[in-house]
Image (cartoon, rainbow, N blue to C red):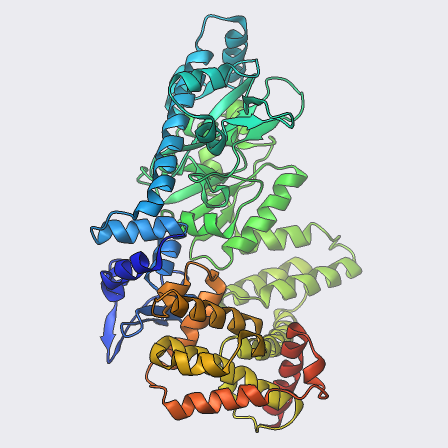
Length: 587
């Protein structure tokens, strides 16, 4: 772990307003700064920076944290990389304790580069197996220029050829194991991770070679072998060929299913083609794409697996600011086959006919039913209305309700009436879900329930816990007094217990409790919760009397004989939701 005193010095030299202002157009409002959130699409500013606590919080999407959290999210970095980014910005070298990790990171990148050169040389060697590998790449329709551009290669047969080469370059066993270039058998023997496979290097967005994908030349198993996650490779945060696509003038990116699809697309002139590293697209990869693209065209295979991948991807893109379209590939199973059959000009023409996400989903629903039959029309209308009642614009609802009416020969007024009912039902469900979130978001205390038995008392204790943690983050000088009275196991809510334990650890290590001090050991979700608590209390200074009240309430706690006292953490949240719903109905 990075020493706390170093982290605090990095934060001391980082003004969060200046940092965020480099990415967001902020407006000064009293003691805060506001702007449009960079983490979700919005038209009305709900993103707030709080200079006093060096924190930020978005009341629209619920994301919050400190300067390190912001850099992690905005640049798609892990914790150490975010600290390194801020340290570099502040002109600070990383501490000695991180030098070993830094050196290892550098050695892994260097080993990957040497391995790629080795694989490329082996591909062009005067051997029978090299000729077989070249024949494979050319059989896939790739030119020599494309092979060079993507650094494609071949890992020769044999269990230690690559290992011996890399050892001759001065790399240690530890470095090669950490890079994922070699493996250790159960008997302790070291052997190549890749052998007798054509090799595809994987670069990060900055152009550093971070991993490899290897494919067999026949139908043997396993068909693919990929690098494991390492210090430099996090597959959930990596998009293949994004380092090339980002150089394009076009902001319309093409999201393909695999490496070969991407390479073929680039060779055909579609230079914004990318694909996800890993088995499926991740939220982190969607976020990464949104930093470079304005529109994404899903271009997956037409088979069942490709259609499932399309459906999953559309769900992930639903909360993204990116425009999303789905490409239909008639007469071919994938883009590569279509281009080979019909040419790149006809493929380019398909983009103008690509469905938007809503059109694609409606078509998938329609394909399930025989709308020539009354029962099929009824089922189609019912499911389509469920889709149109979702988070889309009023204009889209009106347009597609009209299309639905035309397709089914049902009056548009009838469609709109059913749609209104579905929307009202969705709102009721959303309201119930929101009630469940009130406790977690720190707003439960604003309901002003009486301090009575069972649910109301539990709610008061939970709110006291949140207020106590927020007070300690704002006024750490109260911590010694609190530590004398409150033990972690007295906390009712697990997330507040974790937060309090982390605050106490900071104090024992001589560091002032703050969001930045906690960020190294708390996850992003909890950091957002703490940021929201600080945001809601940003203009309140806790007094000793406030802390005494919070501690008194916690010490009284919930009687063991009460209904709430017998509940688990999840059951408490469910119970409180029912209490809140009853209260809201009375109001």
